[in-house]
Every structure is written in C-alpha cells, then in structure tokens.
Amino acid sequence: MTQPQRMSAPTLPTYSPRGLALLRDPLLNKGTGFTEQERDALGLRGFLPAGVMSMQAQAERILVNLRSLPSDLEKYVALNALHDRNEALFFRVVCDNIDEIQPLIYTPTVGLACQKYGLIFQRPRGLFISANDRGRIAEILANWPYRAKLIVVTDGERILGLGDLGANGMGIPVGKLSLYSACAGIHPEECLPVMLDVGTNNEELLNDAYYIGLRQKRITGAAYDAFVDEFMTAARAAFPGVLIQFEDFANHAAFKLLHKYRDDACVFNDDIQGTAAVALAGLFSALRINGGKLRDQTVLFLGAGEAATGIADLVVSAMMAEGLSEAEALRRNWLTDSRGLVIKGRENLHGHKLRYAHEQAPIGDFLTAIKTLKPTAIIGVAAVGGAFTPEVLQTMAELNERPIVFALSNPTSKAECSAEAAYRYTKGRALFACGSPYDPVRLDGKTFVPRQGNNSYIFPGVGLGAIATGARLVTDEMFMAAAHTLANCVTGADLEQGSLYPALPRIREVSALIGAAVAGVAYQNGLAAGPAPNDLLGFVESKMYDARY
Ligand code: NAD
Image 1 (cartoon, rainbow, N blue to C red):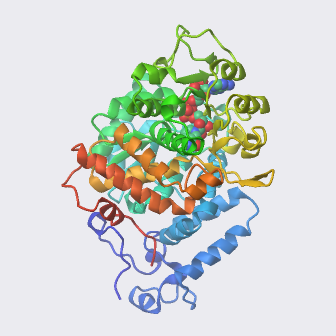
Image 2 (cartoon, rainbow, N blue to C red; image 1 turned 45 degrees about the horizontal axis):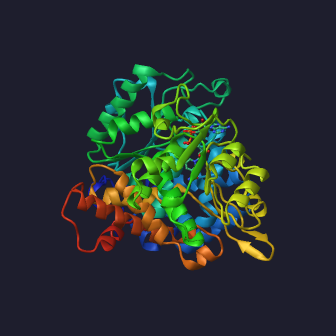
Image 3 (cartoon, rainbow, N blue to C red; image 1 turned 180 degrees about the vertical axis):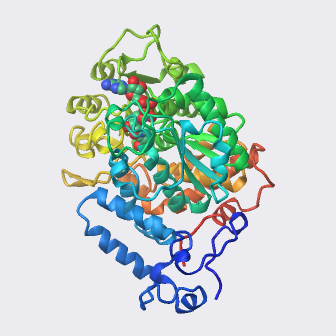
C-alpha cells in the first residue's frame, strides 16, 4: 500500500508522514477513512477505532453534527476545525452542499467570524506578516512549505461592509481561498492566505484582550507603501508567476495597489474587478427579461467606492462594445457617496470618481437623485443597511415597468433592502439581485427565487483560467469574458423565477466555463505561458482538484 497521493504532484514536498504525524497532516489525513491496508502500511494501527468509514459516510456524519449546532458561528468554527484536520473531507462537504455551506464559510457568516476572530481563533492558517517584519518578509515566505500559485492578501482595513478589523480580517482570505478550491478546484496546497498586519485604527480591537494582531495604529504613507512593496517583491520571487488577489483593502489603498501592479504582475482586486463582472452578468440577465439593451440603461449607484466604480467602469466598457462613445457611456452611469450625488465641480473628489462627475445641480439624497435622473437600474454598494426604502423601491417601480434593483452590500445587516422588500414594494416587478443570501419570496401566488450577485461566481473561474495558462497579467478583457460566460449560464427556467444567476450547485461547471473563457483571452493576447491547447474547456477541467479518496 502506498502513501496517500497529493493531487498536483510536481510542486509538492516529498516527505511522507506516517502514524500520528499522518493523522495530523490535514492534506493527507483521511481519519476513519483510512483502509485496512493503509492502516497496516502507514503505521496507523491503534490510532484509529476499528470501523472503516467511506468518505460519503464521513461527510454525512459531518452534516448531521453541523446541523445540530445552534448558531452559524458555531457551524463556522466546526467547519474550520474540519478544514484543519481533513482538507479533502472538508472540500467534499463544501462541494456537495455548496448552497448550505457557502454562507457558513463565507458571507454572511465570515463577517461575524472576523468580528470574533480573536475569540474563536484555534489553528493559524496561512501567513501573518506584521509591520514589525519589515526587512525579512522573504525569510517568512521561505517558511511556507508549499509552492503557492495563488495568494489572497488583505490588510484588513475594509472587511466586507464592517470596516477596519485589523488582523481579524484573515478570515476573509481564508474563506475566499476555500471557495477557490471548492468552486474551481484550485488545489488547496497551491493556495496561500496572507494577512499584512499593519496595525488597526479600530479602538475596540486595540482594547480587546483577545485581539490577535499588532496592537498599534496602522502604518501609513511611505512606510505602508514600502511594506506592501517588500511583500509583493518577495512573494513574486518566492513563487514565480503566482497570482496575487488583493482583498478587502480600504479603497484608498485598493485603487493605488491595483494601478501600481496590474501592468507588470499577475494581480487583480476582486472587490473592484470581480464585483464588476458579477454585477454586469446580472445586468445582462435582467435585460434578457425586460428585453432592454445595456446601451440604453441609466444606472445609479448608491456608493462610489471600489465596488461602484469597478462595476461602472466595466458597464461603460460593455456599453461601448454596444456602440456608445465613451462620453455617452459614462453619462449613463451615476455615483452617489456619503456627500450625495457625484457631480462636476464638487470639491475633494477622489481620482476613481472623477470619470463619473457629470454636469448636474447638487443632489443630497438618493430618492431625489432617482426622481431627477430616472435610472432604469439602481445598484447598492455603500454598506448602508436599509437605504433602499419602500419609497425608493416604489419610485423605481413608477419609473420602470421592470426596475433593476441590486442590493449588493454585505453582510446581511448592510443590505440596502431585503428580497422580500424589493418584490413587495415593486409589486413583484423588480429584477433583483442581492449580496447576501435570501430565501425564496412568495408574493401574489408567484414564487421568486432571488440569487446572490456573489463574486464567487466569478473569481474562482478567473483564477482557474489565469493559473492554468500561467497568465502574466489579469486583464479587464478577462473579466468581460467572465461576465458574458456567467450570463450565458443562466437558463430560461432561472429567468422565469426571477433568478439572475445560475443555481449555485452548478458552480464548478460555471467556473470551468469561465476558466476556459479567461484562458482563451490569455492565449489570444499572448499572455499565456505556453501554446494554446485545442480543447480549452477540457484543458482547464483537467487542472481542477476533486476532493475524493
Ligand atoms: P468602499 O469603502 O470602497 O465604498 C463604499 C462607498 O459607499 C464609498 O464611496 C462611500 O462614500 C459610500 N457611502 C457611504 N455612506 C453612504 C451613504 N450614506 N450614501 C451613499 N454612499 C455612501 O467599499 P466597497 O468595496 O465599494 O464595498 C461596499 C459594499 O459592497 C460592502 O458592503 C461590500 O461588502 C459590498 N460588496 C458586495 C459585493 C457582492 O455582493 N458581490 C462585492 C463587493 C462589495
């Protein structure tokens, strides 16, 4: 009997633990799933009870236990513990029950988990690199025993809509990488979560006895830039060709980092670019229902940050692809921020908003902006819970036969409106997508099935395509291809029930298709490492990890 095999052999270490060490290695452990022969050959006799369980029986037992737990946070902790002891089983459970488990390992539960991270902290995962480690980041990366192909990195300053959670934000890269493996089959060993702990300005955390991070205010300015730059240089040297995804940076850093590195490193920012693609795909689906053209839409955003400008930029590109000039397309997209409508001449407008500062008299509140601009679509990405009031929704329904309403802010407490409100106040006419999961809504004899405009439809496939091809860069064209592919996965039956996205259990099929589309762009644009295969989809699928033993 041979040692249990790791899936992507060429990059992996050659050590072969036995006995207790094997049971303690989450990447190789099968627990009670080790066969009789394996128990003999691998020095496991005595460490396990006599019963040998199939992986399926183990997975069922996990689910029974999980469902008996009283709160989502406890379920998060239990799933994390499983992740720490048996990765294959963890991913089997996630993949086979994605509808039930994704909200527990990612949004919305991960938001609460990050807020309580110090309290629930058990085993560390990934790398914590603090501002005190300046000058020796390469040394720290060399401690990582695997060859990373994908890094998700955050500095914890804007965790979901919850703000600065400092080192507690590590829950986000960890959760996101779990989704990469579950949804697109990126091998867990190739995934590296990184927390750049530059301090926190969150007083509550600084005074929290259980806070896990550096107890100091954030470093800023040149010191911050040099720290991140040291990490970027060291990471690319330690793991040549690695894809680095920036995650939940505050918007001043997010735009700066993306623009600094995107033209010569394989990087992207999911909050900006992934969000854009998933929202654009939702718009394409909505237009299949109301028969409109993207070029004729007027889109009003609540929010003017990473998500809003990311979406608006991609919508502008897509409108231009339908024949509008850039000026015409820009004019059809409007942003509002905490100071009201973004307009020309307003003081202290940040760079990313300037494209959308149109000639217009000042408007302070969202409802007046709707009445004035008469948008066909409103997209909420400001993390202001309840901002789409009944009056906002009713007004959208007065202006449009089928108003497009996307309430994308996370977690659920920050959602602009619930699915129920969106349908009720538009008399069932809203074309609705949400950032958090909502149950189906029954109204006037019809059942609506709202689906999440969740980035997890996009980033796993984009990452898969980029990694499979060894892409040098991740481009906007790849996100545009991802948006079209996702929209094409939505069926007539989905649209019939008001769903603007495919069912989540199809996620691996969807990710493979997106991976193939992204790979196609990489090959066409000379960004890939080798020659193009004949069968792009088959090629991408052959790279996907399937958690089984
Ligand atoms: P951000 O900090 O970059 O931007 C937030 C924006 O909201 C800022 O422009 C701010 O001025 C504006 N804002 C604050 N208060 C406002 C108010 N009262 N009225 C109007 N605007 C106001 O954050 P972000 O990355 O853009 O994310 C925003 C939200 O969107 C978060 O809740 C995040 O979780 C969510 N989000 C969801 C998805 C998704 O579901 N697919 C993807 C990305 C982001």
